[in-house]
Each structure stands twice: as structure tokens, then as C-alpha cells.
Length: 435
Length: 145
Ligand SMILES: Nc1ncnc2c1ncn2[C@@H]1O[C@H](COP(=O)(O)OP(=O)(O)OP(=O)(O)O)[C@@H](O)[C@H]1O
Ligand SMILES: [Mg+2]
Image (cartoon, rainbow over all chains, first blue to last red; front, side, top):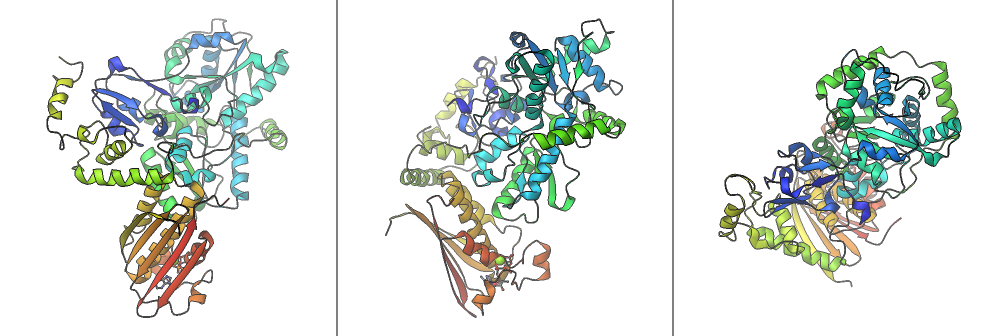
């Protein structure tokens, strides 16, 4: 199941079995058995909630190392706009760009044009969409996976337009291969990512369509190196390197999206997974009417709050507002470039988005009904306390696990009181590795 | 006659807009977990929600029953409310007797019954003024699109 590769790894030696991740997981994808956490890949949406709560650092995000990038001839950085919010109030995006060059990139792509293009393409898409509404933004990969896993009926409402970073990857390959006389394959578009969800969408695209980006490193991974280079006077390492991409670093809108041009009444910006889940539940029931477009970001503060950023969200946001305020009106060249490319390029998503939860769908409907009935029977015997001691986050998930044959219902301490002795052994002196 | 695989009934508590939609929500979760194909699931949820809302708004009390067979879901939503005096009129798009308060909440567009018809493969309404209303809907499980 290669399409279910995820952005995390749990390092068994570092896991204490504390269950924080299991309790934090919004899709109930984690189980903790014999003092160690495991993930059910079909249910994981790469949101990073587990990573944020792990006290021992046993859950790590998979990114590529900076050294791995050396295999490319010509490396171009595509920095998430969130990167520029991570430094001091006086540090400019241009300085950050210089530091990226000093770090070893051959060029830095300013992708304000690509963001503007996608903004236009989405407005167009919303206007021409015949229904059903609301449409749901797809630039946050966690939101896409959440809909694919939990809201299969709404997959058709995900906007089928490429993310700005992908369009940037495509365009910069065209641009630099022409400029440098190289083949597009020699050019590597490397995304500087604010979260592991985007990283994994580049390294292992779930839709099988491939990505126009060739790799991703996280902001937190290169932060210290960048900072050191920004604090140092230019040393010539970046001299002569082109700093390309038309015009501006920042344009209207927030990092990676937001559509102030859409009418407020018909457009809802949502941030944070739990709020998104609440609203999507209402949508699925038909309770939300008159809303045409939901812009959803799994992280509070959208991408500047990504789990692989460094700066505290509120500081980053104030930096962001400052950058937006300092912005000049788009130049005629900028707008000309946007017009030209908008007429020439196709922004549609290349592969179809499909529901993704295949969990337990390996048997026919009759057998699934049998399992469901068995699970309801099991549930009646459970205390509904969601204590987690069986290793599943809720009594309901334990009943489901047992009905699917994934676990034994008697793992519940209410059904098998001696299990507490087994647990006492595993968790002796406050934690599996304690004492 | 295909065999019945599952049958479940839920009481609907009327007049309570806070919990309104919970039963169709529950139904959705069950059918989603059973792996019902997304297109059919969507139609089932729309029909169940609109019917549930009509009971909440006009009848105050009723029951929703769903029956799953190999190839369809049958929904039966029964209430002992005021009944519908002119069914043809009630099925017209935009016809509604909803109160201003309900309209404030985003209901009362007169789209419920038309939507239920559009989203089911077979829809029947039995109603008697002063006695109550029962909606029967069948949604087939083979792909619709
Ligand atoms: N269960 C019922 N009992 C009594 N009257 C009903 C019932 N269901 C519908 N009606 C009547 O039929 C009318 C039309 O119903 P319909 O569901 O199509 O629209 P609505 O409920 O008024 O608005 P909407 O469904 O768009 O919120 C209602 O306004 C009401 O007068
Ligand atoms: Mg109605």
C-alpha cells in the first residue's frame, strides 16, 4: 500500500506508551499495545497532532536531509511564505532569500505570481461550479486526507485546482531549463515546508499523480543555518546567483491562500482541525446552507502555525501582518505576467481525488454488517469510559477492533481485571522506560 | 425480495434545533463505516436529514427507521404531527409554511420535499390531516453517477 505512506515514524525505543498521541489523534488512528504506539495507516491523515504532544520525541516527521539534495544539478528553493514570518521584525524576505542562496540553493523562486494565479483559478472555479456546495479548499493536504478518510461523500467538493507550490515547481523548471540550457529533469524544485503534511504530499503524493516538486525540507530543519547566514555579512557564496521569479515576495492574501476577493457571506475561512470537523459535520448533514466555499487550514493560524515552523504563532502573525502592510501595489509587470500565464496555463489537478478509507472494506457488505452488529454487541459490555487502558482511544474503537479481529475484546480491564497486573508490569514506575 | 441485512429505529425529538440532525448524522456514521459507496451515502443522508428536519419543525415527534438490504436502503420516517393538507403544493419548490424563526436558522426554503424526491429512487408520502405523516424512501446502492 504505497499510497498510504505517512509523514511520521514512531521510534519504538523512545516510545514510553504514555498514550498522549492516541488521545490526541482526531481520526482515532493510533493504538498503544504493550507500551508502544502504532498507527493504522488507513486512518492517519498526517495532521501532526501526535507529533505535537509526544513528550519524548518518539514521533518524528519524515523529511529528506539537506545532504540528499546534492544529487541535483540545479536546486531552486520554493519557500512557503510562512518562512518569511519566522525571523526578526527587521529581517526582510530578500535577506531570507540571500541566506537560502548562501545555504547552497542555486536560486530562490519568488512565487507571488503563482499564488495570484491560483487565487484567480479558484475564484473562477467557485463561480462556475454548478454544485453541490460548499466547495472545500485543497491546498492543505491534511484537509484533503481528512475529507478522503472521514467525509467520503464530500470528496467531489474538494476543489480540483493545483496548489500554488505545485504550479511554482512546474513554472520554475520551465524557466530555469530554458535559462540555463538544462533539461527540466536536471532542475530540482525544493519546497521549504511549514509542516510534514506538505512534505509527504511531495515525497509520496497520495493521488499517484506525482508532484512538480522534487523534495522538501522543513523550516525547522534549516532554521538555525539560515539564521546564522542572515546574521553574517554576505560572504560571496551567493554572489552571482540569480534571484529570480517575477516581482514581489508578498501579495494580498495570507500565506498559501485566503480569498478576500470572495464575498464574505458565501465564504468561510476555517482554521484548526477540531473546528473544521465541526463545520464539515454540519455540512454533511445539510445544516450549512448558502456557503459556497470553505477555506480550511488544519493548523491554527494556517501555514504560519505549521508544526515544522519555529516561531511562536502570534509573533509570526504580527510579522506577517507587517510584511503585508509593507507591500506595495502590484507592478504592471507583475499583473502582466499573471494575465499572460493565466491565459496560457492549465491549473486543473491532474489526478482524480477519491475516498481513501479502505479500512475493513476487504469483505462484502453482508460480512461488514455482521462485523458492525458484533461491534455493537461488544460495545454493550464496555464501560464507555474511554480510559484507553485496552490500548484503543475509545470503547467504541476497541469494540470495532475486536469485531474486525484486530484485538481481543477481553483486553478491557473491566472484562479482565487481571489485565491490570500485566499493565502494571509494562508501566512499572511511571513509564515503560522509567525506573 | 432481497434479504434484510440490518434494521434500526430512532426516535426523533421535535422542536429542538440544537440536536436536530443528530439522527441523520448517526445514520451517516453507521453507513459510512459499512463502506456504503459515497454517491449513495450522500443521497441517503440528504433524504434522512430533510425528513428528520420536517419532523422537528412541523410534527415535534416521530421515528426514523432504516432498513439495509443487499442493494438498497429503505428509510421510513413516521410522525404523529398535523399532516399535510395539500401534498402536491407541499412538493412545489419554494412552498413553505415555516415560521420566521425557522427561516432565520436557514430553513424554510421549501426545498426539503423536492430534494428528497430528487435524491431517492422511490419516494412515497402518506399523510392524514390531524393524524400524521409517513415518508417512505428507497435509495439504491449501485452507483448513481
Ligand atoms: N412531516 C410534516 N408534517 C407536517 N407538515 C409538513 C411535514 N413535512 C413537510 N410539511 C409541509 O410541507 C411544506 C414543505 O416542506 P419542505 O420540506 O419541502 O419545505 P420546508 O420544510 O418548508 O423548507 P426546507 O425544507 O427548505 O427547510 C412545509 O413547509 C410544511 O408545511
Ligand atoms: Mg423541510
